[in-house]
Length: 246
Image (tube, rainbow, N blue to C red):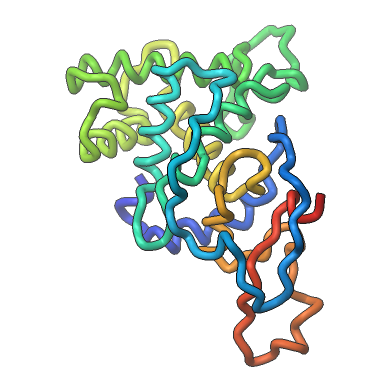
């Protein structure tokens, strides 16, 4: 897995700017309008500290066992460290559940009349399954494989074995039956990055943790209007989400 061979900050910076634009799907209810902080103005959510106790989010697409798998997976891909809270603490599991419950998860804009022939890797997704069906099949197949290989469901494995299991998926060495291990891993990694870097209104990137880690301004998406004002000076304004402009 990339986390074992590439320093985490370098890996996340490499994918971050692409991920911020990948928030298509069902949006959460927008919170009340918030005052937009001025440059250098302190923000109540500044910093990447883990959030406090929160009411559990209602599950829309996943059952409890499937949700436990997703939580374990995103926390293995994005473990808590000095850069940010873990993936689930940043709301990535919530983001994934909402996406799978959305029109995208149901394949609303996918051609699904067949015939479905085996495609080449460069042709992208070529299955008859909707994204939601594909993820649920991948979760079930991975749990079957980890029970045979390690004696436990994926979410019950220690961290070292979860890393080994995801590495086997990434390398295509895990036998998931009719599900492509490599394709499932790539889909899981992609949606995890999307949830970590997307606007918080979609459920992930809670407290804008990834944006603060990267120094990304959020919805404004540019520093061009303050370049002259802050030339050769630090620019420390808090990032702003869609909710800040609602």
